[in-house]
Image 1 (spheres, rainbow, N blue to C red):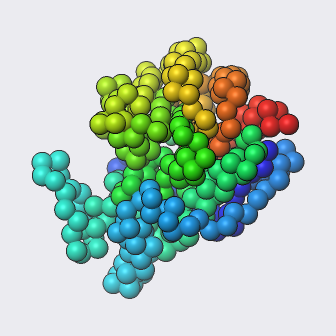
Image 2: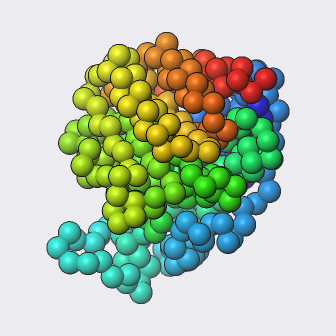
Length: 343
Ligand SMILES: [Zn+2]
């Protein structure tokens, strides 16, 4: 099993963000990525530098205006406001009328960024591009015959919509991996085990019947991103029946989680997927700073075993996980299960 990380992801520092009413250092620290890299190195897995993702692939997922905003807006902001290095919205579209994209880029900040934990800096675009490139290349390795590949994605991706960044996410790495996988496989399944609903991935594939999306996450009434992730969101149009949300009560623990996982796995089998993308959040773990599902380390190993038992070519895409002191051993346990399959 090989692991993919771009040098442009290394060292990326998220700007301070609003959390529970205060401007604080982001929980999405560079140390998270270094913890993932250390695990890969200690396991003796080969670390691969990916080629830069093709524009055509990016634009098949993301709106061109949004991509331009990510690349250029922080520079315009610092020219306009010398000394201010991060861009964050101070107004958002309302729920009562359809949102129109304003010409002024501060209005565009509210249009293209969905919350106040995802500020843009001049470095965000390069790091997000590196992360997306890692996911795309991991998918290429799997298409070339490797049973499993792991992309060390940071920034994460599953909250990124086609035209909106959110939750530390700017480009949807899992959707990019699934899109690459679709060039070979007629049907691709994405399973999201991050504790937070994969709202961006859901949005991107919501009206599609060739990509089945399922997400296990903490109940949306009480958990970020709050407004999506309910069980009655089942897809639209051709995609009706191809979106599965399994919201779980806060503190559910292993047995409840694994029962829900079995439902997801049964649906993936019935969908007859040719390839699996795993949005590998580690924040459902009982120790996590931002998590609330109480899954143990043994529970995570069992999750990996059950996913491996699907016997599908598998692309692992790193998502959340924020307690750096716990991430190393947890990731190692999970990757070991997949690496054993890849031998
Ligand atoms: Zn998360």
